[in-house]
Amino acid sequence: MPSGPLRRCLPFSAIRGMEHVRTALECAAVDDDILGVLIKGPTGTAKSVIARSFVNILPDKEMISVPQNVTDEQLFGGLDLEDAITHGRTTVRGGTLRRADMNILYLDNINLFDPRTVNSVLEHAESGRVIVEREGVSSEYSLRTTVIATMDPAEQMLPDSIADRFDICVQSHSVKEWTERSDLIYSNIQFDIYPDVSVDEYSEEDGKVLERIENAKRILGDVSISRADLEKISSVCADLNVKGHRADISMARVSRVLAALDGRTSVSDADIKGSAVMCLLHRRRNLTKEAIVAEPDEEYDPEVKETSKPVPEPLEKKINEDNGPNTEPVAEEGNTISDIIASVTESLNDMDDIEAVRLHQIAGAGRRKNIIVRKRTGRYRGIRIPDGETNDLAFDATVRAAAPYQRTRENKGLSISIEKSDIKEKIRMKRDSCSFLFAVDVSGSLVDSGMMNDIKNGVKAMLLESYVKRDKVALMTFRTMDIKISVPFTRSVEGICDALDRTEGGGGTPLGAALLLIRDYLLSYLRKNPEERCYVIMMTDGETTDPVLKGEPIWELKKIAPFMKMRNTEWVIIDSSLFVGRINHAKRLAALLNGRYIRLEDIRSV
Image 1 (tube, rainbow, N blue to C red):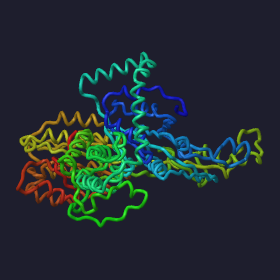
Image 2 (image 1 turned 120 degrees about the horizontal axis):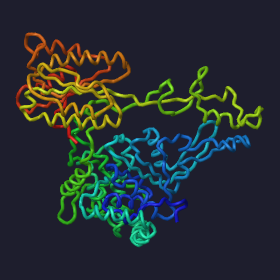
Image 3 (image 1 turned 90 degrees about the vertical axis):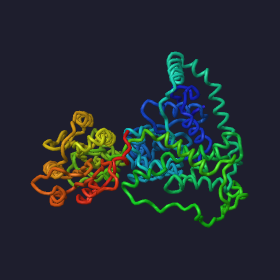
Image 4 (image 1 turned 90 degrees about the horizontal axis):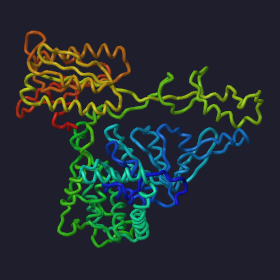
C-alpha cells in the first residue's frame, strides 16, 4: 500500500477514453528510466484526475505535489530552524524533492510555474541527486522519481527546452461520442454518491492494470530492439524535423516498454508507431512557424549515413545485429517506412489541433526574461545583504541567519534575537512585458477579396496568448477618411474582439496617414512607458491608394518610412493579399520599415 494517505479519487479504470494518456502512465510505471509524462489538454478533460487515480493503484508509491508558489527552501531543503534555535546546530531539513524520492512528483499546470524552478526540478530528477548548499549548510540526497505534469496549452505555452526533458507527451481531449459522455457522467455520479461501491466495482480492472505493469517490469530486461528498428526510429524523427536526439532515445525506450506491456520480447512496427505518437508531439518542429523566425536547416538526405559506432555493454545484448548498420530499414507486414511516418504524422496532426497561435513567436518577441525590480512588487526569488536600510525585509532568511546563534545571544525577552548582521533583503523579479499594436487594413480591396473574416480571425487567434500573458494590446483600423485608434492599449482582449466585429470595411488604403498616426500614438505611449517593448503588427495587402499629400503614394511611403524607426519598437507586416505574380506590395512595405514579413495564410486561426 502507498506510504502516505490516499487522496480519494475516481478509480483509474472508471475513466473513459484517454487511451494514449493511460498507456503513457503505464509506460512510466514500468520503466523508471522514463523521466516524465507531460499531459496536455483543455481545462476540464480530467488531466489531474487520471494522474491521481493512476498513482492510487501503484503499491508503495505516493504522489508528491509541488505547489505553484514553492520556494527554493521548500522545494530542495534548507536550514532546520528548530534544530538551529534549540541546539545551535546547522543541519538540513529535506524539502519536497526529498519526499519525492521513490515516489511520483506531480506538477499541476506546469506551464504556470517559474521556468527556472521547473528546469531545476527536471535537472535534479534527471541526474538522480539533489545537492543543497545554502546559508552555511550543505547536504546531498538521492532523487529517484518519475515526474508527471499537466498543462492547458490555451493558458500559456511551455518553453521548448523544458518540454523536451519529458520523455513522453500526450494529449487529453473532451469525449465527443454521446454514449461515452453519458458513461462518464454515470461514473462520476456513482462515485460521488457511493464511493466505496465504485472502488469495489473497478478494483478487479485496476488489479489487471497493475498485474500488466508488474509483468512488463519482469520481462523488460529481455526485450530486444534490432538495428533496423533503431533506423526506423531515426527515419521517423528525421522526417518529422525533430531537433536534438532526446526524441530518438525516448522512442527507443518507450518502444521496448510497449512491447513488454504486450507481453513480447521484441519490438514491432506498432510499438514504434505508438512510441512516436507519445514521444514526438512536443518535439517536432512546425516548419510553417519556424520559417517565420529562422532560416531553414539543411535538408535531410536519407542516402547520407553516419559511420556506425560500436554499441557499449550492457546495451549490446539488447540490440540484435541481424540487420547491419548499412541495411535499409524495412517495415513489417508489407508496410514501408513512409507508411509508418504517414500514420504517425496523421495522429500527431489530430492531437495538436488545439494549439494556439503564438503571438510572441509571430512578432519575433523572443523568450520573456525575468528582470530584477527595486520596488516592493514582483515575485520573491532570492535574498541579498541590504545596502543600508531596507523596507523589504526577507524575514524567513533573516530568521534562518540568526537561528544558529540563539543559544549564545541575550534574548532580552524575545523569542529570537536578531542583530543587524542577520538582516537580509528580498530580491524581487517580474516578467518583462510587451505591448502589441494591431493595425488592420479594412479597405475595400480586403472586403472584395473576401479576406476580412480571415484577418479578424487571425487577430483573435494571436490575441489568445496575450490574454494569458497579460501583455497590453491595442487596435487601430484604417481606410479612407476613417483612420483611428479603435482600442487604446489595454489588457482586455474582449474589447478588441468586439471592436473588430463592429468595424466596417470599404474605401481606399491610406497607408501613409496610418503610419503617421501610429508614430504619434507610440511616441506618446513610450514617453510614459520607457521600458516597454512595442510591436506593431500591421495586417494589409500593402497596396496604398490614398497619399497624405498630392503625389505618388509609394514614393510618399519611402519618405515616411525612415520616421517610423522608434526606440523599442519593431514592425511585423502580415500580407493579406491573394495576388500571385504581381508586385508584392506588403513585402516591399516590410522592407521599407525594416520589419518582418509573414503571409496571412501561414497563421493558423484557432
